[in-house]
Length: 123
Length: 220
Image 1: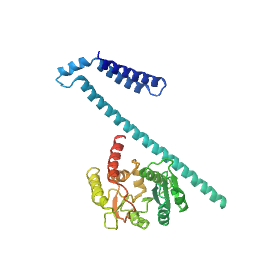
Image 2: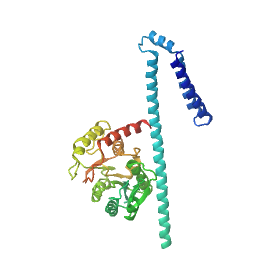
Image 3: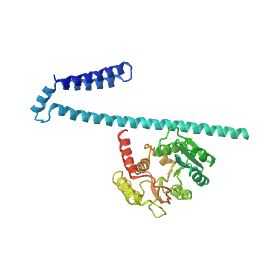
Image 4: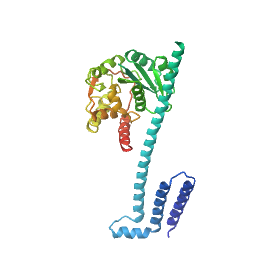
C-alpha cells in the first residue's frame, strides 16, 4: 500500500470517528449516520482497491486512471450535496418567513384588541 | 366596500408618512408592514394613521405583502391594493386601479409604467433591464403584460385568496403575474405614473429574481 493511501485511510477513519461521536450525541439521526458511513466505507474501499479499480476501468475501455475516476465522482457527489443543502436552506428560509408572519400578525391583532378596549373604556 | 392598501416598508422614514397620508383617505384601511426597519418607519407610519404589522426579522417585500394580504383577508377586505412605500406611485391612481374590479371586469389589475403615462425611467433600466425582463417573463413564464415588475396592483378577494406569495424578495412580482395567468382570474392592465427617486433594482437584482424563481420551484 502506498503512503498516500495510508494517509487517505487515516483521514477517513478520523471522519468516521467524528461521525460516530455525532451519532452518540444524537446530533444526527440513524438515516443520516447510515448514509455518511456508507459513503466513507465506499471511499475507504475504493482507496484500498485502487489497482483493482484501475484494472476494472481498463477492462471496460475507460482510459482515466482509478484516482481520476474517484476525483470526478467525488466532485459530482459534492455538487449533489451542495444542491441538496441549498434546497434545505430554502425550506428553512420559508419556515422562518411563516414564523415571522405569525408573530407579526399576532402582535397586530393584540394591538387592535387593546385599542378597541381603550375606546370602549373611553365611551 | 372594504379596500385595504398594503404598503411593505423597509427603512422608508423619508417617504412613509407622505405615502400613508396620501393613501389613507382613499381606502378603508392603510396597512404598513414594517419589515424590521432600523429607522423610524414604524413610528412615522403609525402617526400618519396606518395600521402597523411588524416583522421581527427582515424577510423582504414579497413576504411583507403576503403578511398584509393575510391580515386584510382576515379583516374582511373586498379589494387589496399593493402600493410601494418609497413614494414612486400616485395615491390618486388607486381609483383607476380598483375601477376594473368594482365594475367586475377584472379580478386582478396590474399597473403598467409602459402604457403612456409619465415615467422618468433611468436610461439603463428602460433600454436594457426591462426589455430583458419582458423577454424572460413572456417566453419563460408565459406572462403577456407590458410591465414585468410593477409593484402597484389591485386584487379582489378571490384573487388574493388564490395567489399566495411564496417568493419573499423581489421575485414576487413575476410570481404573482405567473400565478394570475395560470389561473382563471380575469386580468387587466392599467396605465400608471411612476416617479423614480433613485435607480432602484439593478441588473444583478434581475438575475437574483430568476435564481429565486428557480430555487423556489425546485424546493417545493
